[in-house]
Image (cartoon, rainbow, N blue to C red; front, side):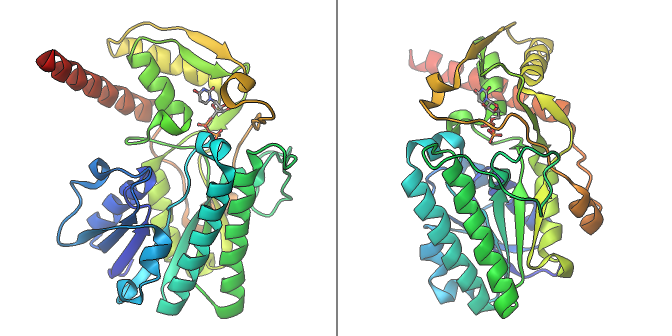
Length: 338
Ligand code: UDP
């Protein structure tokens, strides 16, 4: 990858901060744009310096200023509303946010002659009954009275915007559909299952499984994910196209819970159990959860030879160790105060 200035919107977020780390190590100069609604200063404090500056703003506001784009050759657009919970709580804000921001970012990149990668989501597949999910397949959504689908639909519009500009004016835009990404710095506050299970188990609480726990997902470590993003951004063949990024190692949520319980006990933590909670109790009436979600990874394998390197067991053990450290520190400071 040629080393020039790169913008990452959502640069202080979970995935954005890992991408920043990866690109800095490869010698890039970075501008991280984040409004810190869900991004955190602590995610990037070690990265910020001469070669990595932070602009505290929404993506649209920051990129509306042409001077920010001077000398910029790549824009990774990761800023977005995060997590099912946030989406269900305020779908209208999420829809406006996702579509308006992406539209401004794409047009700004086009004006500056920069390449742009936008992160879409496996939610775009909605409830496609056919597995594995392949980039060109038909999309299937539930009724508009079920608020969950608004997220996938808004991301699908983002994809249309990116692909349309690639076709019409030759914008070097790549669309990536991220599947369940996990790893250090992800927080459970927005509903993500892995950090929730890890923090519950480390705190000695039973893990809350939604539904019967037989739904499946395939989790991919964030370090594998950002590697793919960095490579796709510079791939001539990728422009105007959509790529799944994820893992093909399927696991039921119940198996995931058992694995977290086992690994926490192995790490000297408490022995906890599982409890089952109905979807209605968590998300209210009309919530639909896709029972299975598995990406077809053929396209990405062919494009960049992608094969995830970090196994789920390793990700979980890192997350458990850092959650144990965090709770120890919190415990210590409470003791000091008390
Ligand atoms: N889930 C769960 N307990 C939790 C959080 C999530 O059982 O505390 C389930 C959720 O219903 C879904 C799966 O775990 O079936 C993955 O959820 P997540 O929100 O992480 O990702 P997504 O739904 O976007 O695949």
